[in-house]
Length: 116
Image 1: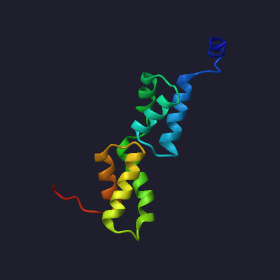
Image 2: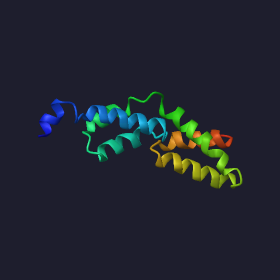
Image 3: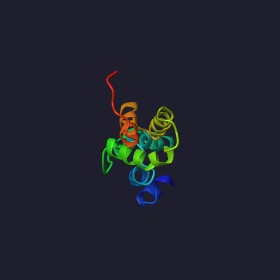
Image 4: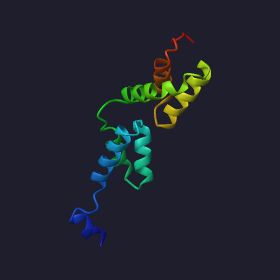
């Protein structure tokens, strides 16, 4: 039965993976790690999930910066340290690596970089 559905194009994991990734990259501004994890959770083969998650229209840094800028205004009344923690945590939950998340949060909140 499944073979027949695949032959007529009603079951197409590759098309599903592309559409899923486009939605998550576009409207949710997720990072490629979160997209790959979501695809694997939906039952997509790991190799196909990885390929679809790498097929983003832009890179993770650009999406993270855009998401951080859109959320930074909501944190205007919050102490800078707390705002940074909240924003960088949001970005990491959306699938961005810690370095990208912290960098995007600093830029969006206009926190100067310091040498650690």
